[in-house]
Image 1 (spheres, rainbow, N blue to C red):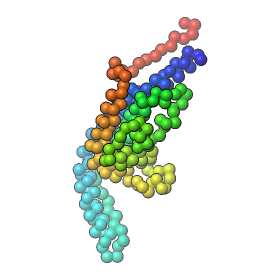
Image 2 (image 1 turned 60 degrees about the vertical axis):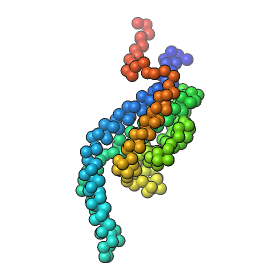
Image 3 (image 1 turned 90 degrees about the vertical axis):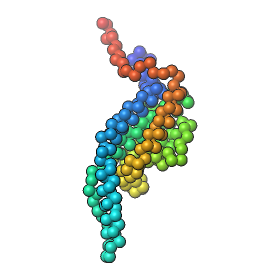
Image 4 (image 1 turned 120 degrees about the horizontal axis):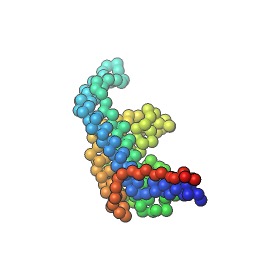
Length: 215
């Protein structure tokens, strides 16, 4: 194997280390929190408008000669699904880091191990030996939907998947589940961090320069 190919394989494997998964999770969490901070000021007005619209729609649906009520929610919807998507990926990174820490043979050259390719957080938690609390399981299931389609696209690949969650904003109850989401991240982060063989010496990136042949 040439030096360049050996370096490529080495860096590919190093990028699968538990610490690499941890740092990736932290970056995604930081991005999610930046979005939450930006969007939270819209939450209260939206929830109030949502409540008003719901009552009007119910009244309309049950009025004489009607069988449905459609009322516009007169407030900007907080863009929480974008942040929740990042949190889904962050938790995915943490769980995969725990899996690699538990079983270093999952690290492979050439292509990522199939066991590390899923977005199913419940499945990943089980594979990592990480126990999800009862209140965390529906959150993990919702995050999996967000990461696969609901946080990225207006529609799912299959109709059956779409009809179970047509409103991405409702998956984590319009933000009310965020405290539990953060607690889940912190627990998972602590679990992975405790398994690192040594603490980070630095969080800085590095530059690699190869000397050109013949120079």
